[in-house]
Image (cartoon, rainbow, N blue to C red; front, side, top):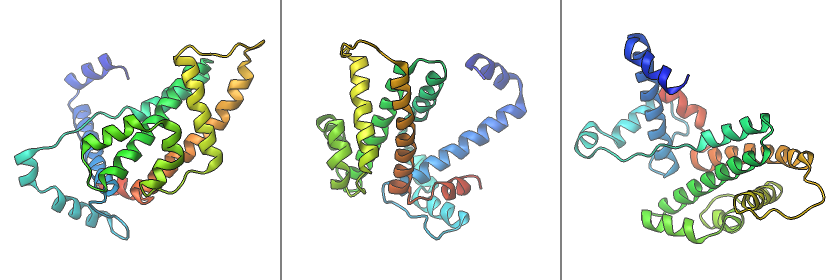
Length: 221
């Protein structure tokens, strides 16, 4: 549904407004739990959905929410991967490379942010490390330094090459070749797809204790 149709339906359809409100509420709760678990403020291991929600209420009591509120950001990371798939179907393979590589950078920077904030460093430190450490450095040594498991060498190399190809396109640095075969880049993108699946699973395990489905179930209460 495009934006115009959404707003028109939202304005005139009361039942639709209720469904939207429920969905937004559920996604907000799920995001709060995921953030708290990722930053080490709570654990969901071995807990029922009811126990998870009770712990969340203790962490974010009404008084705290009413007094100070909280800051939030709109996360477009998921859109980037979806757009990458869409452009593959359309045959716009280099645009897919850009979308996928940007998705990878978002995931890595999110992991870096969590790893640093778990150690109680400031947001300014997070920004400085993200700026100063190159993507190959984040892939190879920064994640283990921050306490995460090293990335699988095969997928790590695929992601590094993906970043190189993205830079070729974005900075207009394509190497001269006799042929520019779509088959070559399409074959590479099949490797990339596996590496992206791996990275998504890696992030969930390293930040959410592998409990994403459990968190989603709690948020539906």
